[in-house]
Structures are given as structure tokens and as C-alpha cells.
Image (cartoon, rainbow, N blue to C red):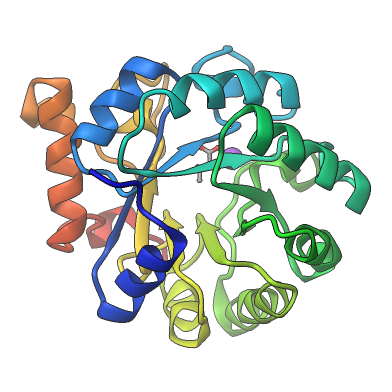
Length: 265
Ligand code: KIV
Ligand code: NA
């Protein structure tokens, strides 16, 4: 079958058809994820943790992202391929463009994702001006946990929700083609979804986003230690990897996942 386009993902938003997204880091899993009908695959810098064994995403390099992206790209025949710009690879417009060039030309990605709020809108704008399809990741930004001092739910209360809506507005105005919110109050995510023009993918952001994403290892139940509360182990019931991937896709499309227990007030 044919590779999904950004146009198709936009149409899914317009039609209220949930976008099913998942991370992958290698060829074999890319094949399995693609075969399960996942619409969007992310080579996330979460590979710093689940592949490399680091405590966070900050050590990951562009060269490492490019290597994993090449491996994943060879395994996809249908899914849209997004890749993260890792920590400090996007500290200014020039470095963001150089990093994106590597990940798209050498890696084979369709789109890059940058962790950005309104403050980083100029980075998004530079990528967009250069013709790079770009997703802006806001709410909880794992590359900022050093500064933040830990993982904390974002967008709580009226002020928090208003701030996320303002970020979304600024990022879309800068040219973001997609938005991703992580670990935010479900109410705030709903407010962003109601105003945004581009597909909004959520993780730990309640059920009212245009799509959902999880980290592959989390949903297979093989993440060492405590998995995030907003994830779900689809392997526990499915018993096989293809079964778990299909069950996840089905649950998102039927709006059975995420449930209230996976979200935050
Ligand atoms: O790196 C990653 O896996 C991500 C997802 C959690 C959205 O950015
Ligand atoms: Na990431």
C-alpha cells in the first residue's frame, strides 16, 4: 500500500478519524508496526532511554537519530515517518536546519519534531520556511526535565490551559504542520484541540486529541522499572507482539484508549 501523506493525516483530523501513532527504533519493529496499520511512526529521542539505557533523552545525538531513522525507514511501506530533533540540535535556526537536513536526507524522515513553546516559534518558522514539515511538541518537554527538575503534569488550571492554547496558536502561526502535547491536563488538551487547525497528537493528554501516541516499549510492557501511568500494557492481554500492536490501533480508533485512568485533571 501507499505511504500516508500529511494531506491524509489532515483529512483524518477533519473527518474525526483518530490518528494512531507509535514509536519505533529499528527495522523489525517498523515492519510489525507498519503491518498493524499504525498511521504515524515516530523515531523518538526516547531511544536514549529505551534503546541506549540513559536516564533521559539529553545525551542523544543527531547521528544516532539518523541511524535509527534509516533502520525504521526501510521497514515502512504505509506509515508516515516523524523523527525527533534531539536535545541542543535545534538551539538556533541554523543548527535546527542542519539537523533536519541530516534526518530527512540521510535518515529518510517525512517530518521532524521539535520540543517548542511560543518561545521557540522562530525555530519552527525557520524549518517551515525551508520547506521542512514540522511537528511542535509542547506541554511536558522531556528535553527540559533538567530545567524543570522532574516530570510534572503541565497545563493545569485555567492559566495552564490558557498558556498551552497560546503556545499552540504561536506554533501554528509559525508554520507547525502538526502539534503534539505530552502529559497535560485533559481539559487543557481539549481546549487546544478545539482551536487548532493542524492534527493534535496526545500522550498523557486525555482522549480529546486528534491522535494518540505511545512509546513502543511501554505498550509492550517491557520498559524497565515503572511505566508511565498514562500508558497501557497491550501485551498483557494480546500475548503476541502483532496482537498487542493491533489491539492498540483498534483501541485508539474505537476511542477506548486512553481511558480516564490514563489522563490527568
Ligand atoms: O521521544 C518520544 O518517544 C516522544 C513521544 C513520547 C511523543 O517524543
Ligand atoms: Na521525544
